[in-house]
Image (cartoon, rainbow, N blue to C red; front, top):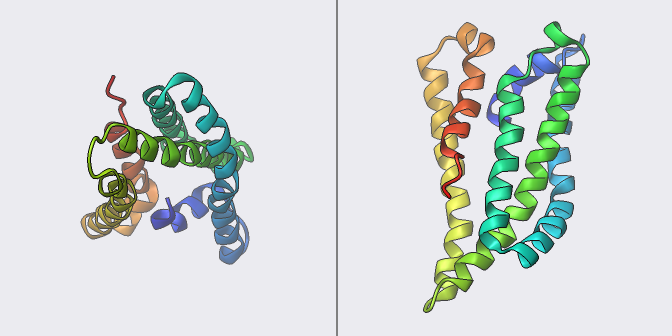
Length: 171
């Protein structure tokens, strides 16, 4: 989401000052990091009681809900103050989900690995870096393929719709 912060600020946090809009945007992004520990505690407890797979399916579903809200949410010009509130709530849902995902996925990797548990568990962290790289390349590609006007109008939403495609849980 931070790759397209300028577009999110424009559509959801309009202010007379661009700096104020960006600060509000990054503030809503940052709030998701503050709720991660709560997600870790709640979803970690859920994973202990209902199993790692159930917890991971829940975290993926919650992440998809937050992503769908961002992808589909009408702008400030369309629904007023409900738009920034919606972005803020979507980011809280995503942060809560991310907090529960890390521990459950790492534990599941370790529990299902008969040998080389540390090596296999390290892939959880390593793939986070790889996904950040891929997301950056995706954003770079959009910036190169679309005009500024297209990105401003609708192009910034493409990564969120794409995230819904790859986030589909496999049961």
